[in-house]
Image (spheres, rainbow, N blue to C red):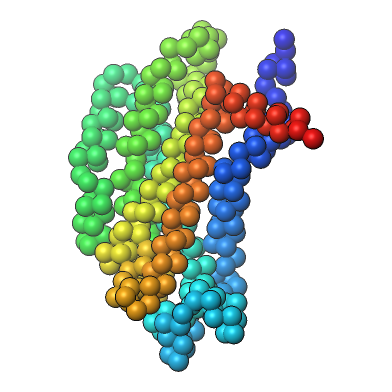
Length: 307
């Protein structure tokens, strides 16, 4: 059997994953919703920023589903008469930027340190793991509160703080995976063939660890979103005139009894996004695992057989 028979080319692999995703309707709906959110985060501020900032005190706390005012007012208005739909779309960019930046930074740093800690000598691994223990000894939200209070709230500071608190997750996971993978036959064969340590780590070990890390990153994206919302709710996250979903919830807190929609709609956006991330993560955990992928492939094949 040739290598081409064992490893399918990229187009065939993409088609196979697309069929498996189509077979799982919940994961498909989650993926479509997340695609919509990311598209809105990219182009939404360019289209609706002016509407999200324009004040209209005559329409302050306008109720939702008022079709006579126009589609942009479908979710109601805030305390300054700004349409909530436009503000939620514009706020999605900052929320996604903070979450994506923190997850990407923590994943890259934690993965590299985990690869080194798992493959290098015992002394190097212990030093790196003590670094992770130091970070984990502080509650993540408490550390974020202290650092943001000292440095001041901003998008960059928020990304850096949340990224630092999530590094141990990727570090410990990667180290555990590498310590098991480095004893496998293909790694030993690469050593015998004279491959350098960086080549073995990044060419042979990292592709095996990557599916697990992708699943963790998807879940971590939801966690970072909730952490950012909590910090904004406490008043030390993103500050006006910038907006995030968490800040919108905080601004609507004092109107919960009279204008519940001010906090409800951004809260619903957070709930649906985190739910979609969890559903997609569960699908990825099976789809990226060669030992469990057959379940999705069997379901996809059954759907193709049906008339």
